[in-house]
Length: 237
Image (tube, rainbow, N blue to C red; front, side, top):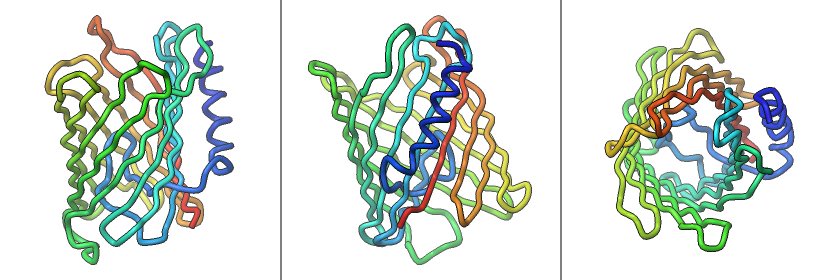
């Protein structure tokens, strides 16, 4: 499957996304998790996807729809699914992952830094495939037209050791509803899998948020595998 076909599949998935589920909290970035949680009773749909730009990439495309809703002013619950398409194979459902998000700073304080934590457990759909767990400490702050965020990430594959990593993001508001930025994510243990994106964010209160990232990740032989990332956020309740 070439990049044009991959991108067409992702566009169809995004058109269908609002019909598939009913929610996920709006994240400000593509790779970086925001600490804020929805108001109690509010629900958001988020759909994240990526497609390889090079035809010889092992992972041609992936799609992750998610539902997140506010439980209390400090707590939110999320459920997301993961599917992917490898080179020469059909789309496959990979995992289901429930998670909980906790806002550590005062939920009444709209200004100033926000700090939060999240914990996720990913159940592999294939028999014999390892499950995964992840914990993130997240920080976000904004000053004027600028917003930055960071995550400290601890992840562990079942039967393996804990791996530490970091994700960082920065965005600048060009005008109302339009921002540009950059995001990166990587492990402290190895360079493989490190990602870097140049990002664009479109926001409209009546619609939601649409995010685009161009970049890619470092693969096993040290080469850079280019990809496009898409993110869609819709408030449904």
